[in-house]
Structure formats: structure tokens, C-alpha cells
Image (cartoon, rainbow over all chains, first blue to last red; front, side, top):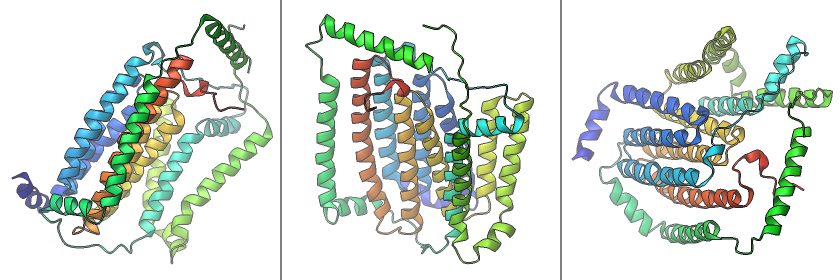
Length: 216
Length: 191
């Protein structure tokens, strides 16, 4: 029934624009929170919200099947796995300590450039966005189609998966099997021959490394 | 072992020159996308009031920040206002593509910047989602009958699930041997 309701609702004037801006506003705020929150487990939970809003955007693009798959795979499966991994690792280390490089003795202009260098990854990502955006608005030769998405999109997808795209489909199942087996192997491997000598050696090496890092 | 650590900015001129060169290369590269289209130069100088508006917004945010505003609020407002300025007069497909580019860049920043290995994996998931939005937007507006973009999204979802499983298993394995998830301490591949 929802499949019949969605297209006329979206074709009303202004509805798609308003829905787009509401969803993207929520999504951008939540994504910034994911990146900026200092407690990693909280940002893992906020990521559920990002995936929920992105599945709303999939609904706007009339991809109902993929919206539900997005919620089931990402918002439930992957986020749950991330949270479990965070609980298995040390919760004491969750709060990240940012190292602040700061030198008061530099002249003002050099300070500005030092901050640019310190935030180089920020500048790289901002400029990558600017590059992508200018490439997008420079390109307007896309063969846009006026047709709406066919109401039996799931039927089209299923038929394509078992006819034209059957080999990638089979290979993706093999890939999933291999990756899950590898993940189980990696996560299960208990080191059985871990005796006290090895622990002492590892601790000594770690201490030396910490000393080196502090002297640097 | 020292207790007080003073870290100083390395002041060698080679580093500074490298920084200048990278900055200049990035600025030039950001305009190259438009520059190589026909009538690209005129478009940059006459038609790009939106870029200048975003730049002014970022400058205003910087000033407010230096006066003492809260950092997260300023960053969020700047990103949101820039996004709305850049997309308001565009067709619908371009809006979705711009949103995907924004999410991708944010995921890139988080992937490079964060020191916790699990957060790096979260940022990679963000980037994969941005790619999915791109594919679905193209399949909606360019190819609404055969829906090839949605097919590719199904494959991307599969690979993303596999990648998350393997990545988290690797993080667990490294944590077991090193007792840390800090990216700066993963020096296994350093020679």
C-alpha cells in the first residue's frame, strides 16, 4: 500500500524539496556528531541515526527495497557489531586525548600557517568537497529521464539478479562466506603459547617505545 | 622518563614550503574541474557568488570562534548554511549528488583525523553510504526503468558488510596483541 501512496505524495509541489532539506539537515548534524563526539561508543549509537536518515533519503528516491535493506543491514547489523567490538576492547581508552601542538613564539602569520598545517586533513577534505562540487556543476550533460520509477522495482531487481547479474550475485555470496570465515578465524585465534617470558618481553618493548615517543 | 612533555612545532623551512605547495596544488585542483569545461573561466569569475558566500560564512564563523563561540555549533551552522547555499538553486539530482559529496568528504576527514581504530571504521561506513546515495540518485533520475544503480547498491551493501566484519575482527586481533586501539600506536608495518 505504501508503494502506491509514495509517488503521488512526492509529486506534489515542494514536498520533495522540504523532505530533502529536513532529512539532510538531520543527517549532516548527526554525521558531525559522529565525527566530533569524544566518546566512541556514543558516536557508534549516533551512527544509527545517520543511517536512518539516509534510508529516508532512499525512500525519497523511491528505492523502498533498499531503504529497508539499509535499516536492516547498517542500522542494526553493522552498528551492533561496532558496539560489541567497542565493548570487547578497553573502555578506558575510549576517551581520545588530542595532542595539541602549540607554539607561542611564532609570529602571527606563521601561526596561521602552522594551524593550516596542523589541520591539513580538514583542508584536504574541504578542498575535495569543493573539487567534487565544481566538477558536478561543470557537468550538465546527463541524459535525464522524465519517467517515474516503475512500481514493480523489486521485480526488476530480482529478475536482473538472477539473469544478467547472476555471476556477480554468486560471487558476492562466496565473498560473504569467505569474509565471515576469515573474520571468525581472526577474532577467535587465542594465542596458546603465551608464556610469561613473552609477556615480559612485550612489556619491555612497549615501555621502550613509550619512552621514545615521549622523548620525540 | 620525563613527566612534562613539551611538543614544539617543527620549524624547518622545508616543511613549511611543502605545506605551501600542497595548499596551492589543492586550490588549483579545486578549480580545475570547472576550468576545463568550455566557458569555464567566465563561469568562475561571474557565476560563483555561492562560493564567495560560503567563504564569507566560514570567515564569520572563524571570527565568532575566536571571540569565544562554541566550536561544534559554529562548525555545524557553517556546514549546513554552505550546503543550503550551494544546493538551493540546483536541480534535484545535483542536490543529492552534493549531499553525497559532503558526506564523503566528512567521512574522509574522520578517517584521516581520528585516532581510534573503531571510529575509522565508522567513517568508512559513512563514505560507503555516500557512494550508495550517488548510485541511487543516478538510477532514479537517469535510468528509472532498468535500475542498474540499485543493483550496484546491493553489491556495495554486501561488500560493506564483509568489510565491517573483517575490519572489526582485525581491530580485535590487534587489540589482543597490543592492548590498544590507538591508530598512532599501530606500528606493526613500520620498518
